[in-house]
Length: 257
Ligand SMILES: Nc1ncnc2c1ncn2[C@@H]1O[C@H](COP(=O)(O)OP(=O)(O)OP(=O)(O)O)[C@@H](O)[C@H]1O
Image 1 (cartoon, protein in one colour):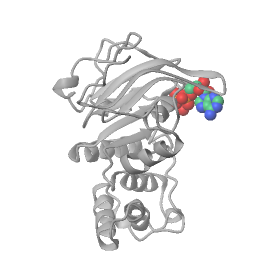
Image 2: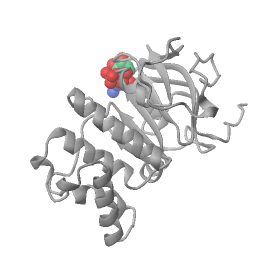
Image 3: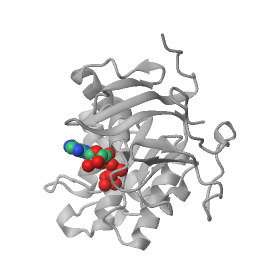
């Protein structure tokens, strides 16, 4: 019935429909995300960004449509399959850091590595390196309550990136930070993802923050809409050649490229 997703799309979705308790949130969203790409999903509050990230990241089952990860279907997985996929292949950064309060920053970052079966020394070494990359190495021995919010959020970013998941989903990762810290955290998140060839899907209601992405798609009322004709000023990275075309409004059943 459906065509297979393109080989070079790490994530691919077609015609996602999703409601929350009968209230529609997505009305047939189709898009693809290339390996190593940083895609920003923008749109006003309530437009469906979190729901779309939830469907792409296997947190939420879709009501209709298809989601594929690395050419394997996600939409046919049951709860246990989706949880395993999330645990083993995806990283997450939300607007709140949700660190374990009893653990130090370094222990928080090492935790997912230890849970995945990595050795103690390797986990702590990697955690220290990620704290360094995120510019919070001096917080390594401190607990979350001893840190300010932007430090905690950078530690949450380090924790998400340390296991080097193929795809990282970041849902309003800077929402609780002041303007300067927002910029700094997103810049670090983007450059760390780029330098490690991680695919990053970022939801933000702030088009200014989307400038860090290679490509932006915009949701309005649960539908993707055409990209504005003018380029976002201050773009810091060119789109990869394969995704250089601006995101167009997908017709039903078409990808957004
Ligand atoms: N758990 C839920 N129960 C009921 N309705 C929900 C739920 N989650 C989201 N919605 C509704 O679905 C629609 C899309 O919400 P969603 O959170 O995906 O949008 P968003 O663009 O991420 O918004 P925000 O920026 O405010 O987080 C909204 O109308 C929202 O009220």
